Image (cartoon, rainbow over all chains, first blue to last red; front, side, top):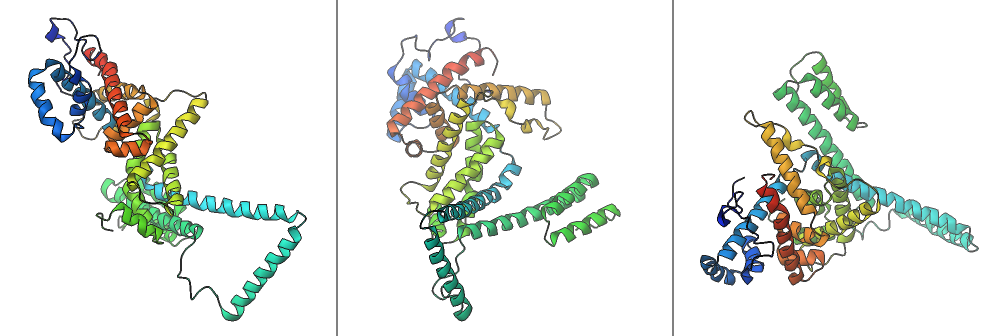
Length: 230
Length: 193
Protein backbone atom coordinates (compact mmCIF):
# COMPACT_ATOMS: atom_id res chain seq x y z
CA UNK A 1 0.00 0.00 0.00
CA UNK A 2 1.32 3.46 -0.87
CA UNK A 3 0.60 6.62 0.98
CA UNK A 4 2.60 9.54 2.29
CA UNK A 5 1.14 9.74 5.75
CA UNK A 6 4.17 8.64 7.70
CA UNK A 7 7.83 8.53 6.93
CA UNK A 8 9.67 5.35 7.79
CA UNK A 9 13.02 7.18 7.60
CA UNK A 10 12.13 10.02 9.94
CA UNK A 11 13.86 12.29 7.43
CA UNK A 12 11.73 15.30 8.27
CA UNK A 13 13.41 15.70 11.68
CA UNK A 14 17.04 14.99 10.78
CA UNK A 15 16.85 11.40 11.93
CA UNK A 16 14.73 12.14 14.99
CA UNK A 17 11.29 10.53 14.88
CA UNK A 18 8.42 12.96 14.94
CA UNK A 19 6.49 12.78 18.18
CA UNK A 20 3.58 14.74 16.84
CA UNK A 21 0.34 12.93 17.39
CA UNK A 22 1.64 11.55 20.65
CA UNK A 23 1.04 14.68 22.68
CA UNK A 24 4.64 15.76 23.31
CA UNK A 25 5.36 18.52 20.79
CA UNK A 26 3.35 21.74 21.05
CA UNK A 27 0.62 21.55 18.44
CA UNK A 28 -1.95 23.65 16.68
CA UNK A 29 -5.34 23.31 18.39
CA UNK A 30 -6.95 22.39 15.10
CA UNK A 31 -4.59 19.46 14.54
CA UNK A 32 -6.83 17.11 16.52
CA UNK A 33 -10.59 17.45 16.17
CA UNK A 34 -10.73 19.32 12.89
CA UNK A 35 -7.88 17.38 11.33
CA UNK A 36 -9.58 14.07 12.21
CA UNK A 37 -12.90 15.31 10.87
CA UNK A 38 -11.23 16.52 7.68
CA UNK A 39 -9.42 13.20 7.17
CA UNK A 40 -12.66 11.31 7.92
CA UNK A 41 -14.62 13.58 5.54
CA UNK A 42 -16.85 14.58 8.43
CA UNK A 43 -16.03 18.26 8.51
CA UNK A 44 -19.15 20.40 7.93
CA UNK A 45 -19.04 21.93 4.43
CA UNK A 46 -18.92 25.45 5.84
CA UNK A 47 -15.72 24.65 7.74
CA UNK A 48 -13.99 22.84 4.90
CA UNK A 49 -12.67 25.77 2.89
CA UNK A 50 -11.40 27.79 5.88
CA UNK A 51 -9.64 24.67 7.15
CA UNK A 52 -8.03 24.06 3.77
CA UNK A 53 -6.80 27.66 3.83
CA UNK A 54 -5.44 27.02 7.32
CA UNK A 55 -3.66 23.89 6.11
CA UNK A 56 -1.61 25.97 3.66
CA UNK A 57 0.14 27.69 6.55
CA UNK A 58 0.06 25.11 9.32
CA UNK A 59 2.63 22.34 9.35
CA UNK A 60 1.10 20.69 12.43
CA UNK A 61 -2.30 20.31 10.81
CA UNK A 62 -0.90 19.23 7.44
CA UNK A 63 1.08 16.52 9.14
CA UNK A 64 -1.86 15.52 11.34
CA UNK A 65 -4.23 15.22 8.36
CA UNK A 66 -1.70 13.07 6.48
CA UNK A 67 -1.22 10.87 9.52
CA UNK A 68 -4.94 10.39 10.24
CA UNK A 69 -5.62 9.75 6.56
CA UNK A 70 -2.96 7.04 6.67
CA UNK A 71 -4.60 5.46 9.72
CA UNK A 72 -7.99 5.43 8.03
CA UNK A 73 -6.64 4.03 4.77
CA UNK A 74 -4.85 1.22 6.58
CA UNK A 75 -7.87 0.26 8.65
CA UNK A 76 -10.18 0.42 5.63
CA UNK A 77 -7.98 -1.88 3.61
CA UNK A 78 -7.65 -4.39 6.45
CA UNK A 79 -11.42 -4.56 6.88
CA UNK A 80 -12.08 -4.95 3.18
CA UNK A 81 -10.09 -8.17 3.35
CA UNK A 82 -12.70 -9.78 5.59
CA UNK A 83 -14.83 -11.66 3.12
CA UNK A 84 -18.36 -12.75 3.88
CA UNK A 85 -18.76 -16.25 2.42
CA UNK A 86 -21.59 -16.46 -0.08
CA UNK A 87 -22.49 -19.91 1.23
CA UNK A 88 -23.18 -18.56 4.72
CA UNK A 89 -25.47 -15.89 3.29
CA UNK A 90 -27.48 -18.37 1.22
CA UNK A 91 -29.08 -19.99 4.25
CA UNK A 92 -29.81 -16.94 6.38
CA UNK A 93 -33.46 -16.56 5.32
CA UNK A 94 -34.28 -20.23 5.76
CA UNK A 95 -32.61 -20.34 9.16
CA UNK A 96 -34.52 -17.26 10.29
CA UNK A 97 -37.80 -18.95 9.39
CA UNK A 98 -36.65 -22.19 11.04
CA UNK A 99 -35.93 -20.20 14.18
CA UNK A 100 -39.40 -18.63 13.99
CA UNK A 101 -41.06 -22.00 13.46
CA UNK A 102 -39.13 -23.54 16.37
CA UNK A 103 -40.20 -20.72 18.66
CA UNK A 104 -43.81 -21.18 17.63
CA UNK A 105 -43.63 -24.88 18.38
CA UNK A 106 -42.06 -24.12 21.75
CA UNK A 107 -44.74 -21.57 22.53
CA UNK A 108 -47.50 -24.00 21.61
CA UNK A 109 -45.86 -26.73 23.68
CA UNK A 110 -45.46 -24.40 26.67
CA UNK A 111 -49.13 -23.41 26.42
CA UNK A 112 -50.26 -27.03 26.33
CA UNK A 113 -47.97 -27.90 29.24
CA UNK A 114 -49.12 -24.87 31.21
CA UNK A 115 -52.71 -25.79 30.47
CA UNK A 116 -52.36 -29.36 31.70
CA UNK A 117 -50.42 -28.16 34.74
CA UNK A 118 -53.35 -25.90 35.44
CA UNK A 119 -55.80 -28.78 35.14
CA UNK A 120 -54.33 -30.08 38.37
CA UNK A 121 -55.50 -26.96 40.23
CA UNK A 122 -58.85 -26.92 42.14
CA UNK A 123 -60.59 -25.07 39.27
CA UNK A 124 -58.86 -27.02 36.50
CA UNK A 125 -61.74 -29.38 35.75
CA UNK A 126 -64.20 -26.53 35.39
CA UNK A 127 -61.90 -24.89 32.92
CA UNK A 128 -61.41 -28.13 31.00
CA UNK A 129 -65.15 -28.66 30.81
CA UNK A 130 -65.70 -25.08 29.61
CA UNK A 131 -62.94 -25.22 26.96
CA UNK A 132 -64.13 -28.65 25.76
CA UNK A 133 -67.71 -27.40 25.40
CA UNK A 134 -66.58 -24.39 23.32
CA UNK A 135 -64.38 -26.63 21.14
CA UNK A 136 -67.23 -29.12 20.54
CA UNK A 137 -69.62 -26.27 19.72
CA UNK A 138 -67.14 -24.86 17.20
CA UNK A 139 -66.58 -28.24 15.52
CA UNK A 140 -70.33 -28.85 15.24
CA UNK A 141 -70.83 -25.35 13.80
CA UNK A 142 -68.11 -25.90 11.21
CA UNK A 143 -69.56 -29.27 10.23
CA UNK A 144 -73.11 -27.96 9.93
CA UNK A 145 -72.67 -24.54 8.33
CA UNK A 146 -69.06 -24.41 7.22
CA UNK A 147 -66.29 -22.22 8.62
CA UNK A 148 -68.07 -19.29 10.31
CA UNK A 149 -64.94 -17.08 10.15
CA UNK A 150 -64.30 -17.60 6.46
CA UNK A 151 -66.50 -14.88 4.88
CA UNK A 152 -65.35 -12.03 7.10
CA UNK A 153 -61.63 -12.77 7.38
CA UNK A 154 -59.23 -12.61 4.44
CA UNK A 155 -56.88 -15.57 4.18
CA UNK A 156 -53.93 -14.69 6.35
CA UNK A 157 -51.27 -17.16 7.40
CA UNK A 158 -50.40 -17.37 11.05
CA UNK A 159 -46.80 -16.74 11.99
CA UNK A 160 -46.09 -20.48 12.34
CA UNK A 161 -47.81 -21.46 9.09
CA UNK A 162 -46.08 -18.62 7.35
CA UNK A 163 -42.69 -19.68 8.70
CA UNK A 164 -43.29 -23.25 7.54
CA UNK A 165 -44.30 -22.06 4.08
CA UNK A 166 -41.18 -19.93 3.88
CA UNK A 167 -38.94 -22.77 5.03
CA UNK A 168 -40.39 -24.94 2.29
CA UNK A 169 -39.93 -22.16 -0.25
CA UNK A 170 -36.27 -21.71 0.69
CA UNK A 171 -35.75 -25.47 0.75
CA UNK A 172 -37.06 -25.66 -2.83
CA UNK A 173 -34.76 -22.82 -3.81
CA UNK A 174 -31.84 -24.60 -2.12
CA UNK A 175 -32.61 -27.82 -4.03
CA UNK A 176 -32.72 -25.97 -7.32
CA UNK A 177 -29.51 -24.12 -6.49
CA UNK A 178 -27.74 -27.40 -5.68
CA UNK A 179 -28.96 -28.90 -8.95
CA UNK A 180 -27.74 -25.88 -10.89
CA UNK A 181 -24.38 -26.10 -9.16
CA UNK A 182 -24.11 -29.80 -9.98
CA UNK A 183 -24.84 -29.06 -13.65
CA UNK A 184 -22.32 -26.23 -13.70
CA UNK A 185 -19.70 -28.51 -12.12
CA UNK A 186 -20.43 -31.14 -14.75
CA UNK A 187 -20.44 -28.89 -17.80
CA UNK A 188 -17.79 -26.34 -16.92
CA UNK A 189 -15.40 -28.31 -14.76
CA UNK A 190 -16.15 -31.80 -16.02
CA UNK A 191 -15.66 -33.08 -12.49
CA UNK A 192 -17.72 -36.27 -12.25
CA UNK A 193 -16.86 -36.98 -8.61
CA UNK A 194 -17.87 -33.50 -7.41
CA UNK A 195 -20.99 -33.54 -9.62
CA UNK A 196 -22.03 -36.85 -8.13
CA UNK A 197 -21.55 -35.68 -4.56
CA UNK A 198 -23.51 -32.49 -5.31
CA UNK A 199 -26.35 -34.55 -6.77
CA UNK A 200 -26.35 -36.79 -3.70
CA UNK A 201 -26.50 -33.70 -1.49
CA UNK A 202 -29.38 -32.38 -3.53
CA UNK A 203 -31.20 -35.73 -3.33
CA UNK A 204 -30.78 -35.82 0.43
CA UNK A 205 -32.12 -32.28 0.72
CA UNK A 206 -35.03 -33.14 -1.57
CA UNK A 207 -36.32 -36.14 0.41
CA UNK A 208 -40.09 -36.41 0.10
CA UNK A 209 -40.31 -34.41 -3.12
CA UNK A 210 -40.23 -35.24 -6.82
CA UNK A 211 -36.80 -33.66 -7.02
CA UNK A 212 -35.33 -36.99 -5.82
CA UNK A 213 -36.41 -38.52 -9.15
CA UNK A 214 -34.66 -35.71 -11.00
CA UNK A 215 -31.52 -36.35 -8.95
CA UNK A 216 -31.74 -40.10 -9.62
CA UNK A 217 -32.08 -39.51 -13.34
CA UNK A 218 -29.01 -37.28 -13.39
CA UNK A 219 -27.06 -39.75 -11.27
CA UNK A 220 -27.94 -42.58 -13.65
CA UNK A 221 -26.85 -40.51 -16.64
CA UNK A 222 -23.65 -39.60 -14.89
CA UNK A 223 -22.84 -43.17 -13.93
CA UNK A 224 -23.55 -44.44 -17.44
CA UNK A 225 -21.15 -41.86 -18.81
CA UNK A 226 -23.92 -39.98 -20.55
CA UNK A 227 -22.84 -36.40 -21.00
CA UNK A 228 -26.33 -35.10 -21.69
CA UNK A 229 -26.97 -33.86 -18.17
CA UNK A 230 -29.36 -30.94 -18.55
CA UNK B 1 -39.24 -6.34 -6.64
CA UNK B 2 -38.15 -2.81 -7.41
CA UNK B 3 -34.99 -2.02 -5.51
CA UNK B 4 -36.01 1.59 -5.25
CA UNK B 5 -38.82 0.77 -2.86
CA UNK B 6 -38.02 2.36 0.49
CA UNK B 7 -37.30 0.10 3.41
CA UNK B 8 -40.04 1.84 5.34
CA UNK B 9 -42.55 1.06 2.59
CA UNK B 10 -41.53 -2.59 2.71
CA UNK B 11 -42.03 -2.52 6.47
CA UNK B 12 -45.51 -1.09 5.97
CA UNK B 13 -46.26 -3.84 3.44
CA UNK B 14 -45.06 -6.47 5.89
CA UNK B 15 -47.20 -4.96 8.62
CA UNK B 16 -50.15 -5.22 6.23
CA UNK B 17 -49.51 -8.97 5.89
CA UNK B 18 -47.22 -9.17 2.85
CA UNK B 19 -44.56 -11.69 3.86
CA UNK B 20 -42.44 -11.17 0.76
CA UNK B 21 -41.61 -7.69 1.99
CA UNK B 22 -39.67 -9.13 4.92
CA UNK B 23 -37.80 -11.45 2.57
CA UNK B 24 -36.80 -8.43 0.52
CA UNK B 25 -35.57 -6.65 3.64
CA UNK B 26 -33.51 -9.69 4.63
CA UNK B 27 -32.08 -9.87 1.13
CA UNK B 28 -31.08 -6.23 1.32
CA UNK B 29 -29.44 -6.30 4.70
CA UNK B 30 -28.17 -9.81 5.41
CA UNK B 31 -24.76 -9.17 3.89
CA UNK B 32 -24.30 -5.82 5.65
CA UNK B 33 -25.39 -7.15 9.02
CA UNK B 34 -23.26 -10.27 8.61
CA UNK B 35 -20.19 -8.17 7.75
CA UNK B 36 -20.80 -5.85 10.65
CA UNK B 37 -21.11 -8.77 13.06
CA UNK B 38 -18.13 -10.55 11.56
CA UNK B 39 -16.02 -7.47 12.24
CA UNK B 40 -17.35 -7.33 15.74
CA UNK B 41 -17.25 -10.99 16.84
CA UNK B 42 -14.50 -12.16 14.47
CA UNK B 43 -15.88 -15.64 14.02
CA UNK B 44 -17.92 -16.81 11.05
CA UNK B 45 -20.21 -19.21 12.87
CA UNK B 46 -21.06 -16.78 15.62
CA UNK B 47 -21.57 -13.97 13.11
CA UNK B 48 -23.98 -16.19 11.17
CA UNK B 49 -25.90 -17.20 14.30
CA UNK B 50 -26.21 -13.61 15.47
CA UNK B 51 -27.29 -12.46 12.00
CA UNK B 52 -30.11 -15.01 12.14
CA UNK B 53 -30.99 -13.78 15.62
CA UNK B 54 -31.06 -10.16 14.38
CA UNK B 55 -33.64 -10.95 11.69
CA UNK B 56 -35.57 -13.22 14.02
CA UNK B 57 -35.87 -10.40 16.55
CA UNK B 58 -36.67 -7.91 13.80
CA UNK B 59 -39.45 -10.15 12.47
CA UNK B 60 -41.02 -10.48 15.90
CA UNK B 61 -40.81 -6.78 16.65
CA UNK B 62 -41.62 -5.42 13.23
CA UNK B 63 -45.37 -5.67 13.60
CA UNK B 64 -45.40 -2.89 16.17
CA UNK B 65 -42.44 -0.96 14.78
CA UNK B 66 -42.88 2.76 14.30
CA UNK B 67 -40.58 4.53 11.85
CA UNK B 68 -38.96 6.92 14.34
CA UNK B 69 -35.57 6.18 12.80
CA UNK B 70 -34.51 4.50 9.58
CA UNK B 71 -35.17 0.78 9.36
CA UNK B 72 -31.47 0.12 8.73
CA UNK B 73 -30.48 2.07 11.85
CA UNK B 74 -32.95 0.00 13.87
CA UNK B 75 -31.51 -3.20 12.44
CA UNK B 76 -27.96 -2.12 13.30
CA UNK B 77 -29.17 -1.30 16.79
CA UNK B 78 -30.44 -4.86 17.25
CA UNK B 79 -27.16 -6.21 15.85
CA UNK B 80 -25.09 -3.92 18.03
CA UNK B 81 -26.97 -4.96 21.18
CA UNK B 82 -26.61 -8.64 20.33
CA UNK B 83 -22.89 -8.14 19.69
CA UNK B 84 -22.55 -6.50 23.11
CA UNK B 85 -24.39 -9.46 24.71
CA UNK B 86 -22.09 -11.82 22.85
CA UNK B 87 -18.94 -10.08 24.08
CA UNK B 88 -20.28 -9.98 27.64
CA UNK B 89 -21.08 -13.69 27.55
CA UNK B 90 -17.72 -14.45 26.01
CA UNK B 91 -15.91 -12.38 28.63
CA UNK B 92 -17.57 -14.46 31.36
CA UNK B 93 -16.37 -17.69 29.77
CA UNK B 94 -12.70 -18.65 30.08
CA UNK B 95 -12.03 -18.95 26.37
CA UNK B 96 -9.23 -17.94 24.07
CA UNK B 97 -8.93 -14.36 22.88
CA UNK B 98 -10.52 -13.22 19.66
CA UNK B 99 -8.05 -13.58 16.89
CA UNK B 100 -7.91 -14.10 13.17
CA UNK B 101 -7.09 -17.78 13.49
CA UNK B 102 -10.84 -18.35 13.66
CA UNK B 103 -11.27 -16.81 10.25
CA UNK B 104 -10.62 -19.19 7.37
CA UNK B 105 -8.03 -18.04 4.91
CA UNK B 106 -10.47 -17.81 2.05
CA UNK B 107 -8.76 -14.81 0.55
CA UNK B 108 -5.48 -16.72 0.34
CA UNK B 109 -6.86 -18.87 -2.43
CA UNK B 110 -5.10 -17.97 -5.63
CA UNK B 111 -7.59 -16.11 -7.75
CA UNK B 112 -5.47 -15.81 -10.85
CA UNK B 113 -2.28 -17.21 -12.28
CA UNK B 114 -0.33 -14.07 -11.42
CA UNK B 115 -1.18 -14.03 -7.74
CA UNK B 116 1.72 -14.34 -5.34
CA UNK B 117 0.95 -16.56 -2.29
CA UNK B 118 3.86 -15.07 -0.32
CA UNK B 119 2.59 -11.57 -0.87
CA UNK B 120 -0.91 -12.68 0.02
CA UNK B 121 0.40 -14.13 3.27
CA UNK B 122 2.15 -10.84 4.06
CA UNK B 123 -1.08 -8.98 3.33
CA UNK B 124 -2.95 -11.32 5.64
CA UNK B 125 -0.47 -10.79 8.46
CA UNK B 126 -0.62 -7.05 7.96
CA UNK B 127 -4.42 -7.23 8.07
CA UNK B 128 -4.27 -9.21 11.32
CA UNK B 129 -2.04 -6.59 13.00
CA UNK B 130 -4.33 -3.77 11.92
CA UNK B 131 -7.48 -5.58 13.03
CA UNK B 132 -5.83 -6.34 16.36
CA UNK B 133 -5.22 -2.63 16.75
CA UNK B 134 -8.93 -1.96 16.11
CA UNK B 135 -9.75 -4.62 18.71
CA UNK B 136 -7.72 -2.70 21.27
CA UNK B 137 -10.12 0.24 21.12
CA UNK B 138 -12.58 0.51 23.98
CA UNK B 139 -15.95 -1.17 23.19
CA UNK B 140 -17.63 2.21 22.61
CA UNK B 141 -14.79 3.55 20.47
CA UNK B 142 -14.79 0.36 18.42
CA UNK B 143 -18.56 0.39 17.94
CA UNK B 144 -18.55 4.03 16.83
CA UNK B 145 -15.53 3.54 14.59
CA UNK B 146 -17.00 0.46 12.89
CA UNK B 147 -20.45 1.90 12.30
CA UNK B 148 -19.09 5.17 11.02
CA UNK B 149 -16.13 3.96 8.97
CA UNK B 150 -17.16 0.51 7.76
CA UNK B 151 -20.93 0.61 7.68
CA UNK B 152 -21.05 4.16 6.34
CA UNK B 153 -23.57 5.37 8.90
CA UNK B 154 -23.92 9.12 9.44
CA UNK B 155 -22.96 10.40 12.91
CA UNK B 156 -26.65 10.94 13.66
CA UNK B 157 -27.43 7.34 12.74
CA UNK B 158 -24.52 6.06 14.83
CA UNK B 159 -25.88 8.10 17.72
CA UNK B 160 -29.35 6.55 17.29
CA UNK B 161 -27.92 3.05 16.94
CA UNK B 162 -25.82 3.28 20.08
CA UNK B 163 -28.17 5.49 22.11
CA UNK B 164 -25.60 8.25 22.44
CA UNK B 165 -25.60 11.97 21.84
CA UNK B 166 -24.09 13.00 18.53
CA UNK B 167 -21.37 14.96 20.32
CA UNK B 168 -20.42 11.85 22.31
CA UNK B 169 -20.18 9.85 19.10
CA UNK B 170 -17.77 12.41 17.70
CA UNK B 171 -15.64 12.32 20.84
CA UNK B 172 -15.43 8.51 20.69
CA UNK B 173 -14.55 8.68 17.01
CA UNK B 174 -11.76 11.21 17.60
CA UNK B 175 -10.36 9.11 20.43
CA UNK B 176 -10.56 5.98 18.31
CA UNK B 177 -8.62 7.55 15.43
CA UNK B 178 -6.00 8.99 17.78
CA UNK B 179 -5.62 5.66 19.56
CA UNK B 180 -5.23 3.85 16.26
CA UNK B 181 -2.62 6.38 15.21
CA UNK B 182 -0.67 5.65 18.41
CA UNK B 183 -0.98 1.89 17.88
CA UNK B 184 -0.27 1.73 14.17
CA UNK B 185 2.44 4.30 13.74
CA UNK B 186 5.23 2.24 15.40
CA UNK B 187 4.20 -0.79 13.34
CA UNK B 188 4.39 1.26 10.17
CA UNK B 189 7.75 2.73 11.08
CA UNK B 190 9.12 -0.75 11.81
CA UNK B 191 7.87 -2.02 8.43
CA UNK B 192 5.47 -4.44 10.13
CA UNK B 193 2.44 -3.16 8.29
